Length: 85
Image 1 (cartoon, helix red, strand yellow):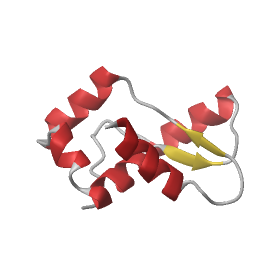
Image 2 (tube, one colour):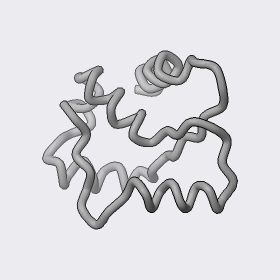
Image 3 (cartoon, helix red, strand yellow):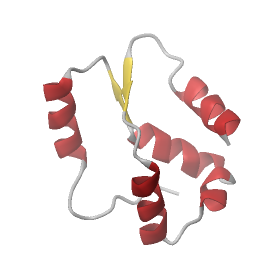
Image 4 (spheres, helix red, strand yellow):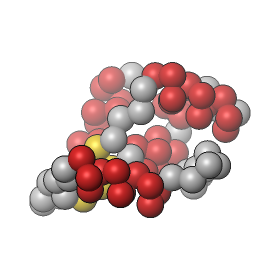
């Protein structure tokens, strides 16, 4: 699994510049999978979906704590985001 994630992230974030990546906890990830009706295998078996989910958790540039807080609030709502399929 780690190799799949690294491969997707390296390809997606290989451009010039810095990136900030937000990593959910295992509990958060599992909760979201349950809310979306998906399993880890569903996500790992679908390269496009996996890429969308990982890129949803990445921002261009280096961020300090305050900038991270603003970015997260701008991306999140009370509803679970549904990545495009």
